[in-house]
Structures are given as structure tokens and as C-alpha cells.
Amino acid sequence: MSQLIVRNVGQEIVRALKRRAARHGRSAEAEHREILRSVLTEDIESGSFKALLASIPDVGTDEDFVVERDLPRQLL
Image (cartoon, rainbow, N blue to C red; front, top):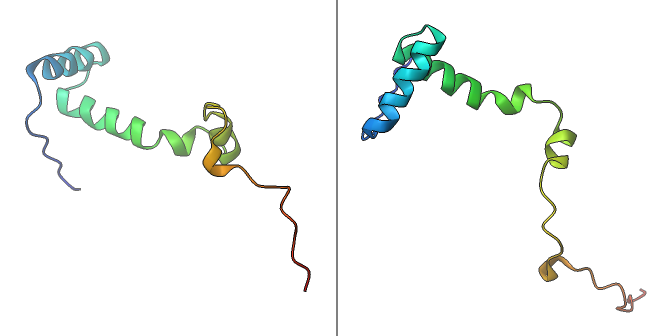
């Protein structure tokens, strides 16, 4: 199995990880693995691509992507 070393993590994050691990009855290392597993496999488990697209917020229109419909087409 591979190893992953995370450096320069703030003490508050480490304390929060240890508290969360204690709540779940795991070591901090096991909790770290579970957090990574759950977050990185979330997209796979959450459903279809259609559901993912539907979850994207509507931000209105963008002039860069407006299709000019009034332009005449050249016939060959």
C-alpha cells in the first residue's frame, strides 16, 4: 500500500482531526484515510453524470457563448 505524507498542517487542523477521530473511535491516521477515501470517491458514489450537471449552479448568460442566429448562411 502507498504512503502519503502531509506536511505544514496547522495545529488547529491536527486537533480537529484528532477530535473527529476520537468521535469515530479511530486513530488520527485511520480518520485521515477515511476522510480522503470518502471525499475522493464521492463523485463516483453520488450518482450519474446527469445529476452532476444538474448540480452546477446557474450563473446566467455569458456573452462569449452567445450564438449569432441572424447571420446569413453561405450556400454552396
